[in-house]
Image (cartoon, rainbow, N blue to C red; front, side, top):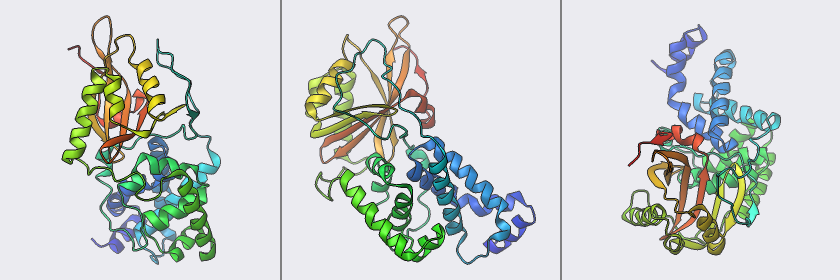
Length: 337
């Protein structure tokens, strides 16, 4: 059936027709909400609000824009409402037993940040981007980019995503946000300035190795060997000079090789030996981290570690709570070896 047929049947109350109409866009709308909100849980809530609003508002859909654009309009405004109304996930105190972390370099701003599984991301790249798109899709889902977006004011964030990530023309973005083209242009200029303060200039840090390339595989294998053996010196040799370690929702951050070395020395003290299970998040290599119990040897999940690679080095490591492990199909614990 055509979209027109599906809309007519959905307006008559046919839920199956509505699902056929919106299912091709469900995952990319969730990714859009994730970029806006920085949290997978919040993005799923916003997606459900969007679908409910679309179902209830079918009678007002005039067909002047595509169904996809109509859904993006609803989703963007639902995210803006959420950002105005909701308090973000609060910061947590250090909660790793028997480990005293060193003094951090700074405290992070985006404690609500969550990872996005690549298994879901693979389902979102189905629709060609508009001619105004500037950012590569791998760049536009990276943890560094998502974190930088969260610092921007909400409407600037929305304009930048719609214009330069998705490629919508300014006139369509103005219609989505019920504002003027001049306002959109001004917001985009300010958003670019805000991003430049958070992200390195193009090319300054080099390019990340292509996913699953031999260069990435080699670097990741070296990291796994060093991490699982607790060899802090070997880990440090794989890092860039300005490496950053963060761990939302714990706000502690460590910048630079020396600070990161002190952190990993504390983390791996007393003979702790972690086991890493590979996965991918935000287009980046990631690992479920497991630590054996001293009593029965059962390996309990301690968190998810996501690496940012630049050239042949690791430029960032972001650790998330073990609560995210099920999102990646990873168990909370593994049998003893």
